Image (cartoon, rainbow, N blue to C red; front, side):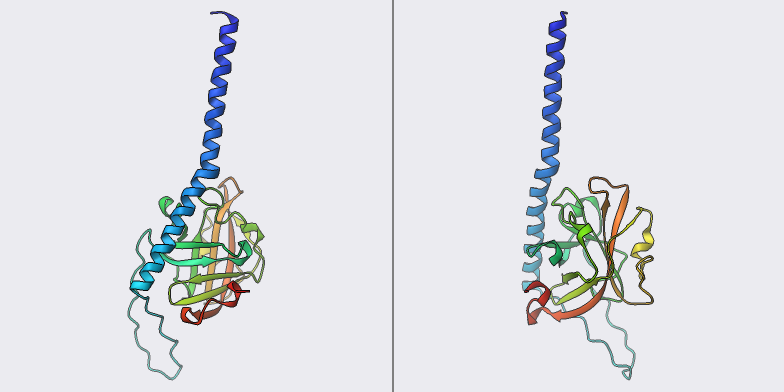
Length: 234
């Protein structure tokens, strides 16, 4: 085999490999984003249709100190991989809206944000914890490091707008630090029982060796029938 043939064959292999790499990058940077955006939009449409057909029962008001204690009926469990709320973060843009689905399985996070199943529901006492991709599959948390104290995170469960306020700049930790989603999340600075929110995503931007965490506390609630909260209408 001549040297010229070897060089030509090697060059053709390099061109082929380069083309495959480019296609792979395009798939991750573009196509997964298109699919995730379509999937998220479909989940939000399905959720809104469900709310229109079967309105979610609003949570009962807190009992007065003088009232006799009574046991509230257990809420209907969220369905694995199905949406139950939407989330808005104005810091990420006026049109930023993603569905929140039950569990953090790989397939679930391809369609939106995932609720850590063992954590609280929106507005409940405890820690409502949610995960999302930093990059690929729509890049929902691409701008995560931009979060600042006082930023609003607004959740809609079909009956109530829950407005949480970010407590501090995002915190960097390791994936095994599961205490960040405890009922009173460790490292958050919160003390005692409360209504908290934890957001988690991967760190660095194109890796997963660490996690970025943002904590927030419930600041206000508003019935859906009263219109969108001011954080989403300014």
